[in-house]
Image (cartoon, rainbow, N blue to C red; front, side, top):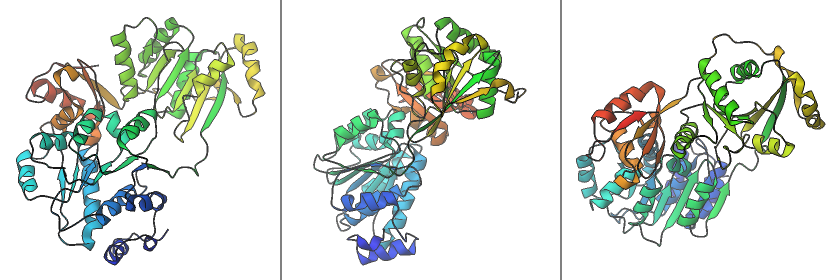
Amino acid sequence: MNFSKLPLTQAMLANLDAIGYKQMTPIQSEALPAILEGRDVMAEAKTGSGKTAAFGIGLLHNLDVKKFRVQSLVLCPTRELADQVAKELRRLARFQHNIKILMLTGGESFGKQLGSLSHQAHIIVGTPGRVLKHLNKESLDLSNLNTFVLDEADRMLDMGFIEEIESVLSFVPKERQTLLFSATYDEEVKEVAHKLLHEPVVVQTTTDEKPNEIEERFYACSDKTEALIKVLSLEQPKNIIIFTNTKIEAKELAERLIARKIDALAIHGDLEQYERNDVLVQFANGSTPILVATDVAARGLDIKELAMVVNFDLPHTQETYTHRIGRTGRAGAKGIAITLYEAYELEKVEPYKTEEKRLFLDANDLVDVKGFEMKPEFITLVIEGGKKDKLRAGDILGALTGEAGLQGKSIGKIDIYERQAYVAIEREVVEKAYKYLKNGKIKNKKFSIWKL
C-alpha cells in the first residue's frame, strides 16, 4: 500500500508525502500499477475513493514536461468537478516546475481560454461541450495526446454527453491510453467502455461490500392508502415504484397521493408514447419521487438506485413478486420492499410466510404523521429542440451555467430526443432557469420552453 512500491521518481514520492499521501487507497493500489504500465483501465470508484490521484499520478508520471503540447485530457461532467480535479492535479504536479494544467469549461470567457491555449498546456481538464467547441474552432490540438481520462462516466451519460464524447474522440489519436472512472457499472457504462477501451484492466474495489440486501415487510391494514402514507412518512425514501394490478388503480392511486400533497405520477397502458416518455423522464431524473405502475407498464424500466418498492396490490404470482422487489437493493445499496394486504387477502399472503427473513407487521402500529408531504428534488424543463436541431447536452449546460449563472450541481439529468430535450433543475432554482431559457438563447437560437 506504500507509494514507494511504485516506479515513481523520488521527487514525486517526496511531494506525495509532503501533501499528505502516506498510503495508497484501494483504488490507487489496484489501478496505479496498470496505469503506470500504460494499460487502459476501467475503474469503479466512488467520490472520496482517491480516484483523482489514481489517474493524476499516472498521467503526471508519463508526462514529457519539455514537450509543450497537450499530452493528457480529462473530461468531467460539470464545471465544479473539473475545478476540483484541476486543483488536485496542480497539487500533485508540485514535484516538477513548469507543468501547465489548463481548465476548459462553460461559464468562462471563451476569449480568455483562447489566450491561454495560445501558450499551450500539458494537461487539459474540461467539460465535453467546451472542449469540443475549442476543437471545432481549431484552438485546441489533441494530435499529441497520449492519455484520455473520462471521469464520472455514469454522471456524464446521465447528463446526455455521449455524443459530445464521441465527437471529442474523433480528434484524439487512436493509439492512446484511455482511463474510465465510474461510480456504477451499468449496461450503458459497459457499452461505452467497450467502444473506448482496448483490453482494459477492470478494477472494482467494492468486492468487500456486503451483498445487496432487501428488507421485506408485509403490513396488515384496513386502508392501504393510509398505511402507504404512514410507511412513506416513516422511511422518507428518495424514490419509489408502487405496483398495482390494474391501470385504473394506478391512475386513481396517483391522484389520491397528489391530493394528499405527495408527488406521484402513474404509468399504464392507456398513455400515449409521448406521455409515457414524459413520465419516465421525470421519474428517472428525480422530478417525481413516486411512480405508480402496473407490471406491464413497468417492463423494460431500468431505474438506478431505487430506494423502495411497494406492492400496493398483491402480485398474482410469487415470480412476479420476486421480479418486482428485485428492482430495489441494487448497486450495493440496501433496498426496502413493502407489501400491503387487507383481511380478505390473508389466504393469498400465507405462501409468503415460508421465508423467515420476511417481517409480518401491523400498519396500525405505525405512527400517523400529520401534514406529511413529499416534493420532488428537481423540476423538469422541456426544450422544444433536440437532435434534429443539433442541440447537445453541453449547449444546454453551457447556457445554464454561463449567462444564467446556475451551478453545475443544480442541473440534473439531461435527456435529448429527436425533437425535444428534457433538463432536470433543482426545485429552488427552476424559476431562474426557466426565465433565462424562455428569454435567452441556446446556440444563438431561441427555443420554446415549458415546465412538466
